[in-house]
Image (cartoon, rainbow, N blue to C red; front, side, top):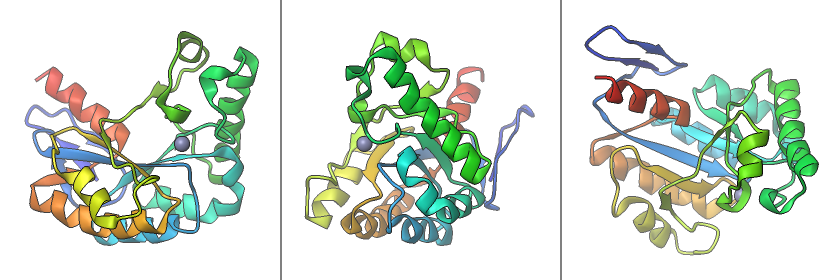
Length: 213
Ligand code: ZN
């Protein structure tokens, strides 16, 4: 994927022939708590629909899905850190908090060769200790599909798409079959509304370019 703009500031990203101008309307699809048996289906679907996402993974699941993660990265998706085993980070002592993040960084690097640059804290909770102990960019969301709670695919689709705005970050979980089924309805809707999918790092780059324009 290639992000360009008029004054020659260009960003090279991975895969996809589709070019994204920084004035395009963009959306970041994000998936927490995986990888799982559904992740492969999700990345294949995204790839076939010229879409990318960001996957905030749990360190203790990485080795079992090593090949899925390598494929995911090669498809242009981004991998982020979501702790080692989903401990509530801000409730931990500093050294345990650090360990949850670092162990996950290490295993991702070891299994895929990729080093994440972003962290999604468990339960979206942030405190000063967390901000101090990590250099990773802390990424939350502004559209919550509640896919962990709703069994209805249509409810998830409506929550994901009803009030979409340029630059939104949508929260989903790639550990439910219904999330995959909902995604197959969400992607056509966001495309019809004129949005392009970008990863979190691409979104941050686009926001930076817009600010300095
Ligand atoms: Zn989570």
